[in-house]
Length: 343
Image 1: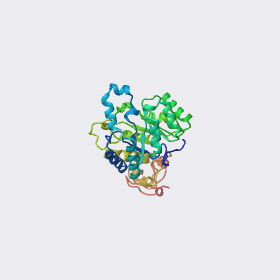
Image 2 (image 1 turned 90 degrees about the vertical axis):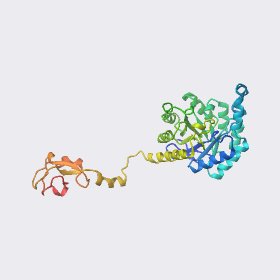
Image 3 (image 1 turned 45 degrees about the vertical axis):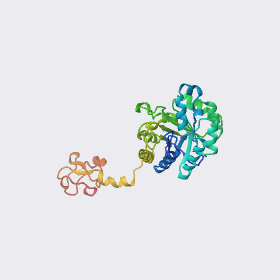
Image 4 (image 1 turned 90 degrees about the horizontal axis):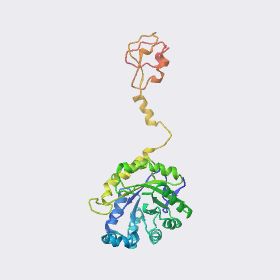
């Protein structure tokens, strides 16, 4: 796999320490101070990055849609952040020591994120998978791309990757994603992470998690996911766009710790017996014992022998080798037979 390095020099690799992204989305409810508090909390609970949405009412939906849904435009306007707002929260992220990124929906929003906010990568929403001109524009910026794959079949994903590659960009991270909010457990198909890795061996694979809870993120890390993206809120009881499927800081802290623990626990593929386990052998394994009182000069038979703890004597795998051996001393029943006891 090619090295995948973000603009802030962070490197992402499958099976390495996962990069945890707190998806802020609209859970700031259009309030800058709430957004800043979310950023601070995301840093506090161990996230690596906060991700916003750069859309405005004008870049997201057409007049046709708003003519049919007049309330929607007011809602999107209320929940969106202006460029100055985004610059302010980006600066706050920088001050907190956590990376800032966002999902753009227009060329000018891409430029703003890269030039004004210094975003370490551009997140491309699942809805843009077949928006080839937009993909090409982002790709030509040279910025690392994190591409969600929700709603897309494998041929559409291949085509999107091909468009990006032909534009000269090979910094692609693909996110397995189910664009249901939240999805049923049976629809999540985490093994798609393996399928994407097989299809795109040159690129790291992550997971955009829309499930309720933390276990799917940990399971994705067990499958080698390099990046976990999870919706984040300060208060999921508030009614809002996607806010009910977001997780609060204490749950996010559990998710972060769980993902990191799983990644560390994966360890190495090569089998090794640890020094601490070797010490346990003498306590926990069995040794050969006499099942009845035996006399010096007796020739051992298999029926004379059993195995019990501790493991400080002759190991069970050698029990057949003792048959026919002659004892040099009396052996009490239920006691260990030692090498020195045999002629």
